[in-house]
Picture (cartoon, rainbow, N blue to C red):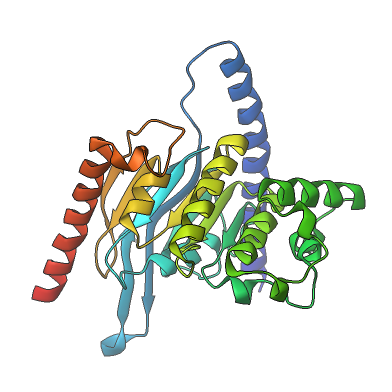
Amino acid sequence: MRPRTEAGNTLGREATVASMSSIRDEQVESDLMEAGVPVEPRIVLEPRNLRVAYGKGQDAFTAIGDISFQVRAGEFLSVVGPSGCGKTTLLKALSGLLRPTSGAVLVNGAPVDGVSPGLAMVFQEYTRSLLPWLSVRANVEFPLRGTGRRTGRAEVTRRADEALIAVGLHGAGDKYPWQLSGGMQQRVAIARALAYRPTVLLMDEPFAALDAQTRSELEDLLLKVHRETGMTIVFVTHDIDEAVYLGDRIVVLTHRPTEVKVSLDVDLPRPRNQIESKALPRFVALRTEVLSLILAERSTQSSD
């Protein structure tokens, strides 16, 4: 048992050192920006040669083949790919909910083992991620009261207030999830993640179950939150228009065993607008390019 303990302690020391280094880097970065010096954004999340496989021998199945990419501080990264390619599996591996077979996930340059305190996740199934016996406010405050966190009562209240205001639910704190519409429940899930203040927010098709109007409203809400907080977001979606509209960059995945097919910069001006941005020739060109890449993957999968 001793070697595992030493390994765990080593990993913990690496994470602590990386966290302290990250704080120093953020201060230096802020000072340089105030001085007008161009600064290359830090790498805050990096899956490196990540592989996920199930079973052994003839029953072995590789879900994720070999994935490596980097996510920069403040970036909004959209992730798309063919249906069933393993996008959710990838997010679970990034979040620490699923242990990879090989490779590593680095947060602020340090490998993490298990669930990283620097990451938060918003799921597609919002009805299952909220605790129905807790009020909206209590749901938002819940992760701040978790084991190992030393957040005072006043700070918890302040963070919850700010998060609820950010998602337009400040007057709904005393309600319960079952009293809210689907769109409002997902706002609660987003508020909970914002209150936690993660290094990176992971989102797994969070608007897929919503109607078109509510979906567009929450897309714009998310862009507003991203603009005002500078939060780093990794957003998985099957909707190509959504990926282009929201993202600074799009990672397109292959079919299984999943790898990165291509990374595309989304060179559309911000702030974005549901009507004007989607009417731009560049938006249409990017959408067509991403769709063509995914259709090509489907064709390859069909011929296998």
